[in-house]
Structure formats: structure tokens, C-alpha cells
Length: 143
Image (cartoon, rainbow, N blue to C red; front, top):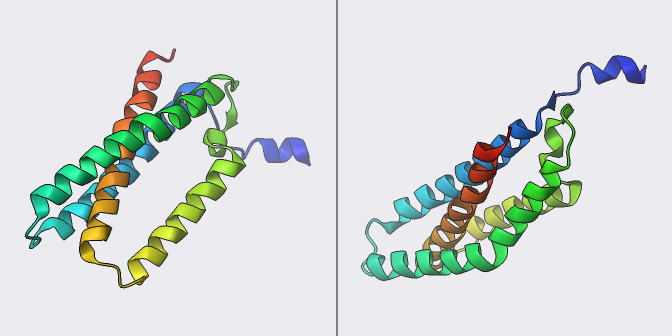
């Protein structure tokens, strides 16, 4: 029975895992930056908010997400070809992603000042987008 189920497993090469990781970080970062960009219009202090969000996002990228991305890349490089596509992230990381998505939904539901939401979207979006460069580089260097 187990052997029969194996043929339905979406097993892929290591390079595909790296590509998926890079794509996910880029897509989510871009989505968040776009949401922040939509909130920028009509804000009197938008240049200050933009610079502050990008600066904070750069710090978050450098000190928090870059080490996480490097660790994920090294984990993926230990995979054998044929490893399930969902293994791109560990169970712990997938749970963290779900918690962050839920937290984002809760934040949107609260009546927070639009400037704070804008700052958070820009900071998190930029940090994800900037740190995705590590996975893109690893994918380009993969055999």
C-alpha cells in the first residue's frame, strides 16, 4: 500500500525546492509591498513612512530573515532528489507561516491606524523580498 502511494508524492529535485522557496518569499514580499503601496496614497507623510518601512525592513532582513533563509537553504541542500515538494519548509516553519498569516488577518481586522499598517506592510514586505535574494542565488548556483 505504501509503495503504491509513493507514486502520488510530488517528489522534485533539490533545485526545484530552492526555486519554490525563492518564489514564495518573493511573492509574499511583493504582495505585502503592493498592499502597503495601496495604503500610501492619500497619506500626508508617505515619504517618511516609506523610508522608515524600508529602513526597518532592511534591518529585519539583515539580522532576522537572512540567517533564517541561509538555514533553510542549507536544509534544502541536504535533500535527495525526489523529496516531497512540501518539505521545502519544515513542519515548524509551515506552522509559523500559518501563525503569521493569521496574525496578519487579525491586524487587518483591528482598527489600527493606517500609518501603522502601512509601516508593517512595507517593513515585512521589503524584508521578505530582499532576503529572497539568497534563495534565488542558491537556485541559480544549483546543479
